[in-house]
Image (cartoon, rainbow, N blue to C red; front, side):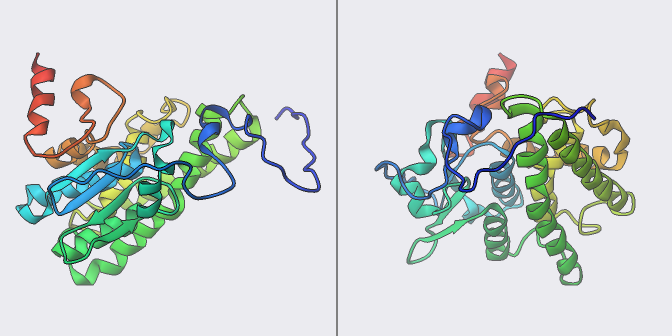
Length: 287
């Protein structure tokens, strides 16, 4: 390994707004709103404010799976939050999520609106509300363990490997190697588990699968950071098979379209306010 120029930390850290790569303008050492901007409110019981990143996709997949399973009370509006424009720092969004990260949910199904933020919290809130996709009671600890595993592990994949491999100001050998090693370790954890289990919590598809798939499923399918060859993702055959099973679910396919701003036009549904909204995207694909 070649030795790069050494960095000596200053006695007191100061914020360099220009340092940080492609997403530098979104990162700051303080919280709170930067501008006034109230969130829109639609007609459905659930109001989601999100973007089609892996954390956002988790929630829209669950909503679509609930609706597919016949839970009509799970109708939702999904409003686009463009983080590149700083929408997450508007006063309305900060009220919904003081951490200024997508997704954020207002549950208006009861007498008083309830806010829920952090993607796993939203998954748990909805799954418990409808008593769906939690798996049987005997496997609940396993499901929760994998759900929490995802929340603790994905930052090493996204903010760690993804940032230094694809978005940092310049390639840096040490962090890329460090996070590539950890990403492959995590994929190996999943692959060995899925060699013995159809789904993450055993024999039933749950919110643990929905949480892990947008991050690790995309990675082994070569869709994340164009790093499939670099990470030798073909080695993780069980993860690939699992990811393909979820890819084939119509609800998962719809969920990954919602609030998506990249890919082909027929793959994007910037906002979702009715089930019929997907028909327009289907027509675009046919056309």
